[in-house]
Image (tube, each protein chain N blue to C red):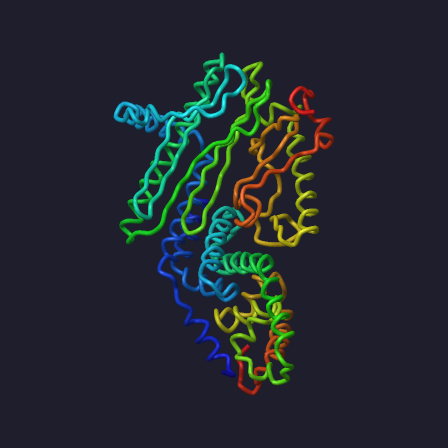
Length: 165
Length: 292
């Protein structure tokens, strides 16, 4: 595959799946401008490092990896602000023991630490396979499975719900 | 909401902004354009013809334009940089503002002409791209698009003149590239990065220094992010500088190395310039004439 063919392939792939990746980016930053920034950054990174894409069948995991890492980079820079917000919040709110129970699951996922959050999002929202997530996170599949269980426990998702891992 | 299906629904309900498609397409185009730049010969050929044609017409057609050639700070006694040509376009959501520098007063006319032709070529190519992008964007239903190019005299001493040109493309968020030319005013030659060093070893030496420096800065300041190896990331980490990496020489004879926005770091880090301590490179320099 020449670089030119690869470029065309990646270009088509990105255009075709732009909505999925936008949602993924949005799930990290929760606002339009930053999500668009992440998408733009990711596209530059992908197309500038096209040499590293070895085979066509890796496009999906390769590009997921770029978007996830770009988003986490972004959070690393802006995320601390959110953490502070929570601290301030807790000093003002009376103690609430039931808080976690009432959390809505979507928000609870957002409060998970990395890599748990990404694993949950990729597995359940983006419907990726465990093996694919393993490639994206450079881990083996068993590690991802273990983390997925741990994340679900943290979320207190009722395991009897027959969650398909 | 207790189950994953509901959460997933919420995840999928996120509204896709209508500018997403344009941003995606323009980012791809921008990346393509950058790749094309890496084969300069082709671009030079087409650019020159376009530049000559457009420039001649614009000066002939608009006496106002010819008059507006503003003189920017007087440099040395003879060598100076003026704004040769300014293109401005302001059409609703499309904005272009291009300034082309022009070096005058060099005795080495060949060098002077070479530089000036290059500057014109750069801006004409930029303008042409911009026109094409407008056309495509119009067909796609419109959007925001901007391009700015400007220049700055970074160093002007008795010996050295260094001019940086910046190019900013705005599509949603912006990308910036910077190129710098450094001229030895006394000897009337254009200094290139390889010409300062005995051999290629400088590439490794400077790259190693920069990686250490970036790692240090990241350790001290969590807001700083550079793409260097230890992040085990996406596969385009900074490894080495290009042999002709953008560089400049400061008034106090220090070497600086610059990177474009997105070249080695996330976009918010912008254009990055590092000063290289002379002791890092001194044994590789041909002489201490320029860099001390």
